Image 1 (tube, rainbow, N blue to C red):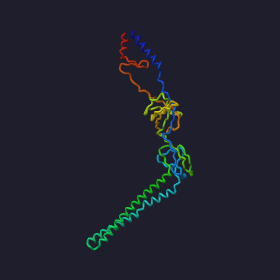
Image 2 (image 1 turned 30 degrees about the horizontal axis):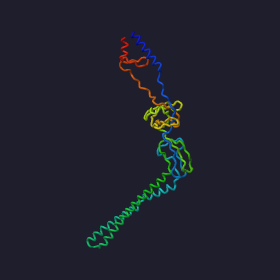
Image 3 (image 1 turned 60 degrees about the horizontal axis):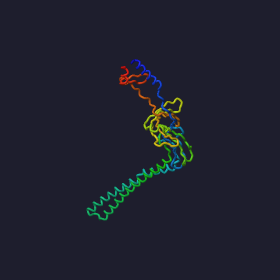
Image 4 (image 1 turned 120 degrees about the vertical axis):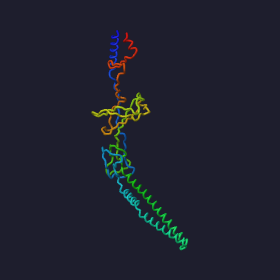
Length: 303
């Protein structure tokens, strides 16, 4: 009788396992792969493009010069300021004059002490030394002012140089050599490492997606494998019109293999479960776990 019960239990568990079948795959959602940053670069001053050093599709580094506006006047002004700030002849002449005035003052003090010179001559020597000392201080301050003027002139030259604010790719070049730059941007720069994945999620899944979670992203490219992206932002406000909320993910792209602007499919929580081994006193029957330590199970076997 006990053998018949055991066979019946095993057959029932096998049927349940067969009916359950493999676990259903996680539902996927449409998404869009975008650049992490996009910047329209222009000039803060009006001018004419004198040189353009990159073209559309070129990779650029942070701080790299992309274009230069005509700056003949500004460079000439900076050169004059640089020459003036580097001139120390007036300072050396003033310092020499102060040394001479100091020597005259010492001799006057000695002669007055010996009653060979009147006090009025000593007063005159002291006045000459103070004037010479103030002249040195004045020239030093003038040199500092000229140094600041040089910084201003160099900054004006820098305003006519367009540089990349970050590592990326030139997505667009709007103007060409010789064109006038006013309010319109000259370049569009896109940062594509990392990439940004934007997905619109139904409100029914609010609370199931958390920052730091890893999701599987399948780019819409032939033979493109799924890649992992990490949730960086989950909106806390649901759009009432569509009853959805937005989720943003970071997608590493160190080899720049994936381009920006791709459509994709995304699945959250698709990590495969870790394989587990049966515990002591347990058996696998029909792909399901059967615990033979249960009192009810042992009791049936006794009968």
